[in-house]
Figure 1 (cartoon, rainbow, N blue to C red):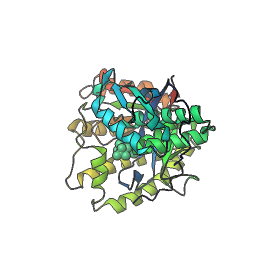
Figure 2 (cartoon, rainbow, N blue to C red):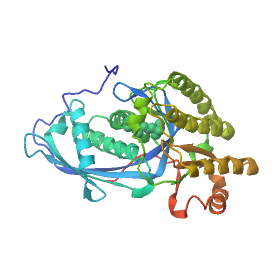
Figure 3 (cartoon, rainbow, N blue to C red):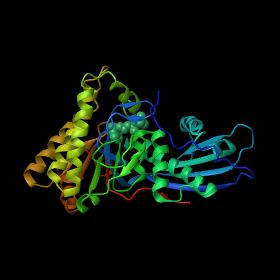
Figure 4 (cartoon, rainbow, N blue to C red):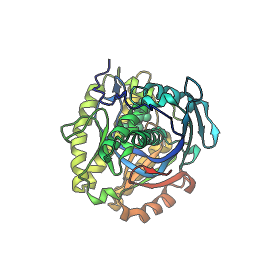
Length: 363
Ligand code: DP6
């Protein structure tokens, strides 16, 4: 049973007269979690609060063309990178159906949705966060345009975050630039399990942080996020993990505020390895790292100890490595990748990203 308040049900958001035709477009970035969301309950509510950097380059661009529904039942055609994609189409149809009480106007329109990612197909990067947040921004834009609601940035982004969360949990953090937090915590006022909020007190060093994504293995993930979250329901270590996430969050927020890169590194790496430890200790168990992942982690730690450059790694639920470091160390890190990681990655398999400013309207 859902424990949500759901403030967003609004039967008035329906066209009384003519249904308009037009297009809206949004670009929205992916994000990389520092404190990981892993384990959920009810309708996509997190078991612990999470924190992420919103990225810049790794993004999805989505245009939504709408017109009056031709038949009683509204329709959606979904094109991904120029081709009709029936998997995404079915997912979007189900997603829109779930939103009919929040956006009643959806049932009055036919949609053609076109979506593309800025990162290569084969990057193995999760695109649900960027994809779902771009779509959520577009839907809130339609509401604002036609009904004059959501007229402050705060109201607009909060609802977009709520909608994005229903599509994919981590997507709710992508609607804000910089650092976003999702999940109720006494460390940040107005935080909520239902939507993300921006983290206001961030040291300038972290606002300009770099995230170099090393694509160790471009194949599709072994296990879906949904299945991974599910495994936390029976993992014997899960209660301790949820408690630890809250403690790590408190320490990380302080480090982000004060510019403490050493503590940032400790906590970020601990979170990444704990996520993987949870997968290794679930039943069935999963090993999501590749041998190259482990080798690169060892090289990063060795490089950090040798040079004093505060480069940290983190991981998603897969083998690829995110290297997080200050802007001023960019040249040294490029050199490190070229000289010491060439056995594992080519220049083509590195995405040089950075902390970004959040979604943008494109049409
Ligand atoms: C490891 O947001 O992809 O990236 O809510 O089922 O769509 P769903 O899961 P998803 O899970 C993300 C997990 C993670 C950690 C994180 O981003 O916090």
